[in-house]
Image (cartoon, rainbow, N blue to C red):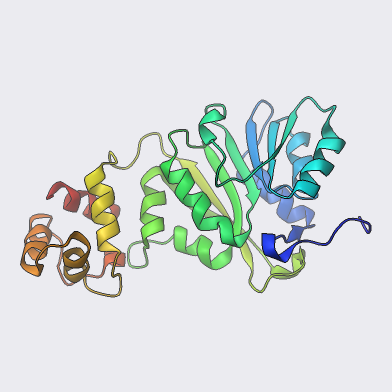
Amino acid sequence: MSNQPRPKKKLGQHWLNDDVALDAMVEAAKVKGGDTVLEIGPGTGLLTEKLLARNSSVIALEYDKHWADELWNRYKKHKNIEVVHGDIRKYHLTNLAKDYKIVANIPYYLTANLLRKLVDTNNKPSTAALLIQKEVAHRIAAKPGDLSLIAVLVQLFYSVRLSIEVPSELFDPAPKVDSQILILKRLKMPQFQPTDELFRVIKAGFSQKRKKIKASLSGGLHISKHQAIKMLDLAKIDPNKRPQELTIQDWHRLSTTL
């Protein structure tokens, strides 16, 4: 390893070398023989080894050409792994087997893009175990009172829970913040049927999240404040609440008033 290049800051690379944390990620996704697992950013392949030890079929998607080549050379004769040099932001999840899983140590700058992709895709993973910034993990797992736009969208399709925290000093190089494993388990059915109106109302509501919901809806939907209050009254929602206080059920009722 001493002859290998150092992690690249511009790619957000932070190698995790801790067996306990790596095992926790694999266990969080309940990886077993026969599973198809997408690993995003495998880097040096320590997590890859643990996934293969479970007899799963691994698709190792690596953006860094050096590490993609390293992994291909290491595993070119292994029947249970496919190494792909590519970018998750452009990768087609629809090509993966139904009920695939994702296990990944995500560069922090990619987290929002990946979560939105997992919301938008028609082929959602059955389970995703993502090691991400601790603060962001808590934001996605938040309850009404602290909800954000991305938390509402994720929780519409997945049950969300937190696993172990991973201190920054376990990474090389150490990031400035701690990480935590976020576990997403796909719901059998979305909490509510996603519609254009539902997404439109949620996005409008969070367009000015520091304001009361009546003001953010008015601005986001380009309607008068009187019309916004009427919508909220019909949905039985206090117009003086903040967007982060609304439940997913509130957003659904609100969307039906459109």
